[in-house]
Image (cartoon, rainbow, N blue to C red):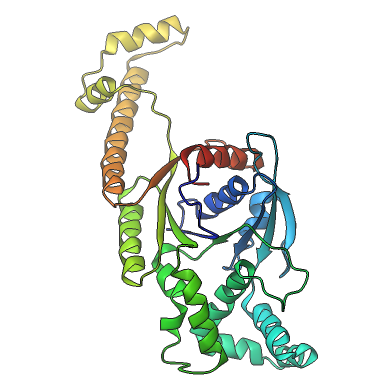
Length: 332
């Protein structure tokens, strides 16, 4: 059973290097079971989805990407992808709400669109989030568009996520009335509702965990709904607690290590064994650091999930494996 049955919009954020895009992609696969349609969006212009799934760069158009993770009965849904561009979103907005089709394109040629989104960064965020909102809240103006069961947004990093989603506050000094202000206020009803969850991705290191804690505090202060903390890149635990304690204290039995090397048929000398003992000490120290940060995550007061590290890198097969772990833990 999913921990988030009411959520339609899953926003995935995280400090750079924690695997935010990987987690967002795997979450979309996990959600797309039982004939469900899921949209995976990105807004940072990096074409991360295309690279993750090894496809051509995505246009500003919803494209069928792949099938989702099958459910217990073997049924799969479909994952679609969308690369959201602020300028294209503005032109679509003008065409949809003001019927400015060719006129909107003329504005683009004169550079008015780029000027508007550069001079007022808050407007850019309204346009980007506005397209996400439209994908969740499909209406009659977008005839024939796919109705999605869930939307997953590969969002900006943790340090900017509150500003990015809190579009009504960001526009306070720019537009107190008018259609853009009305649109931002309408979007905030979704972003602050139980239909939205902002999930934060971290790794078990001090700086990303602290940034996650700060991000949760900022989201709560802005009345934005905090989802779960997803701890990514967890290493396998190959040594027992007593062995880790002995490695940290420098009490591992040198003779036993030499005997193990002999049984494996591996040549060795004092330099090799000393190096192995040093590696074991460093490994045990890192484990202790990870355990301390795991305790910090547990104290954040939100559900947490752990995803394994793939030493060989992330491909489509690894994404499906991560999706299966997410579903087993209740994230999807």
